Image (tube, rainbow, N blue to C red; front, side, top):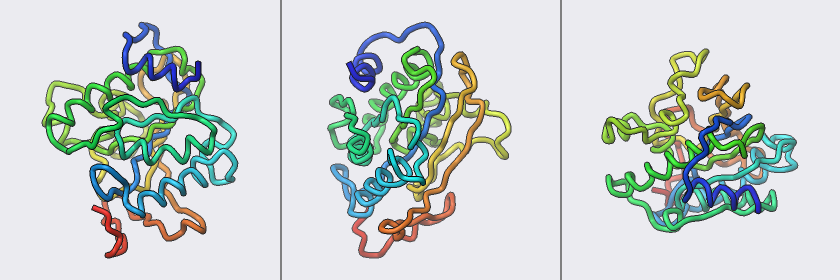
Length: 238
């Protein structure tokens, strides 16, 4: 059974194990730019290919994981699945799917509540399942469910974002702290969480990497954190 198939069985169905066993590293990246609820736009599809060819490549000197094959490449919704597939293909891996990942998602309370449940399951599995000890995991995710003060307020009293679920507010040494919200305009950053101990529930280090692609993907926008993306007017992205 592959690691991804195992995750499908564990994170999506069965109770978690009581032991704590955090991965060595978790790399979080947002999905590419969208055309609609069903698909990425051309810019987003190009970004997905660029990630697979450069930052998440098995061979590129730019890769964050070239010498560290991920134990899993995870997605949570249709847009994240579409973004992650080129990277999974580059590594010869598959992405375990469930019905939530195959349906168009609206940014409304009902659909967010469904994603909240899955977010909790995956985060708990990553921190408690010994399968991930000593490994690197790539998460291609929805930005509302990475960090969103608005979503946390809407579902007050629940843990709904990775910022909450992975205890990112407790990470030491981050000037100003880990951002409370991933800006809607940013598709071009990685959040990297490093764990020094398998029993850790808080990352030892938090760092960011900004995407600056080389040709043939050098045209992809790389805006400052919180700044407008500056995409072409005819991009068709929403």
